[in-house]
Image 1 (cartoon, one colour):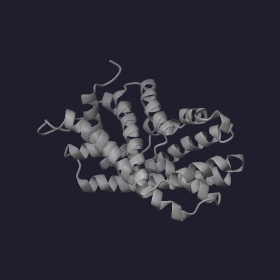
Image 2 (image 1 turned 135 degrees about the vertical axis):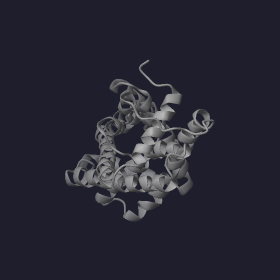
Image 3 (image 1 turned 45 degrees about the horizontal axis):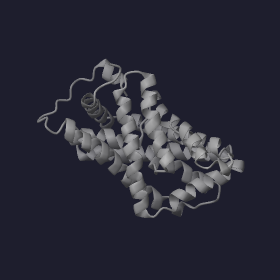
Length: 271
């Protein structure tokens, strides 16, 4: 077969979670920065594709933008990067399997969130503002997109975050299950495209689009944290509960003592 079974994916995800939790500070800093930048580049592509399309095209505009957005997660998972939302799935299942402790999980999430933020701010400022790729003819789209995010009440943003990382976590899960690059790209593409089409909120993507509007002078930093906090929490529930915990219950709960087997070459290639 050209893919792993769900039970095998659970084992791969646990081992991936262990690796992520045990990463060095240097690895988390570099890969976290790249992860935030890659997701932001995907969002930048979305803005550039949809920003000047006619409003009369309706939801077709969103469909076209959603079709290019997944490039960010493809780069993270295939080229190499650490992304908070993916780690909310992978490190969590390792935690449920008792292979990492809560301190390791929290440390990984917070550090990767910080370095993702740096990568997102870099793209938002230097490519979006300094080069002007989110401004000029594209400013209206940038500001409107950011305003939609920040105008959601706390609990709406929270629940939207759950839906987002349910799909993003599944994209990562499916990517781990594919054995070749083409399969990984397809596994990532459709769940991510779906979350963008639906309009769910992704914490790292918001770390790009909201500052892009702020740098353009259309929003303020007081709008930033009130959005990031509920979306962060919602993404955590979506990835850790709706993906990791549910699959852990099915595939690993009855395993009394899960042994972290050596990751063979095939498994290393799976993510």
